[in-house]
Length: 214
Ligand SMILES: NC(=O)c1ccc[n+]([C@@H]2O[C@H](COP(=O)([O-])OP(=O)(O)OC[C@H]3O[C@@H](n4cnc5c(N)ncnc54)[C@H](OP(=O)(O)O)[C@@H]3O)[C@@H](O)[C@H]2O)c1
Image (tube, rainbow, N blue to C red):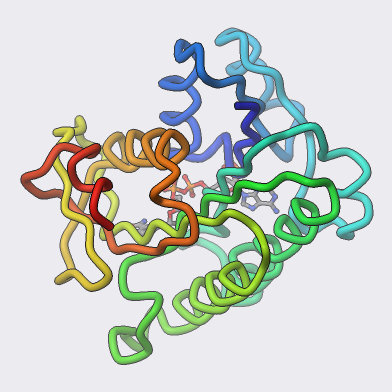
């Protein structure tokens, strides 16, 4: 499977690519927005594609093709304002869905956020962020793409435990980014995850057990 990672230079994206590069089931390309970021991927033997989610969708369509799957793990981050959240987490995501549909990239895996599917769970400080995540997920679920929406809890930079909990609604909790990256790999391997959405936190089940019965 040939996978494009959008947000490749980010924390989950980088861990995912490091893991997937030695997996013979996959070839992966890192989508980055700055030439200066390419060295780290070159050193890992991972091809790069330079593109910015703020570009026009037809520009993106011209250069993004030949992939079987997109992992969308980009985000504007906490240091920018709500305008960038809308432009990246919502419109950037939707542009990539349009690119995928236009260029026959059938599989689309979205890294969303725990609780994004329920307005009652959005706190005031992060409301615009949840709005962006929510509507990106809603729009993805209305496409014909073979989507999976993964909604992790608070992300930690700790070593993964390999043990997770997955459900349509989970209490707020956390999960190491490494475990999220492993879940993304398992999602690509597991047809049962197609057209499914779930919250994800650390738990007691192995990743393959947790994803078996969603
Ligand atoms: N933090 C949490 O606790 C939490 C919880 C649940 C879900 N999430 C979500 O999980 C996802 C991944 O998290 P993370 O910590 O790995 O994120 P991250 O390290 O902030 O990575 C985000 C990536 O998005 C890229 N990006 C931003 N604007 C872009 C643009 N205009 N064009 C192309 N790429 C762009 C960034 O590029 P540069 O490297 O060039 O800046 C970066 O590589 C995010 O969507 C986040 O919202 C976070």
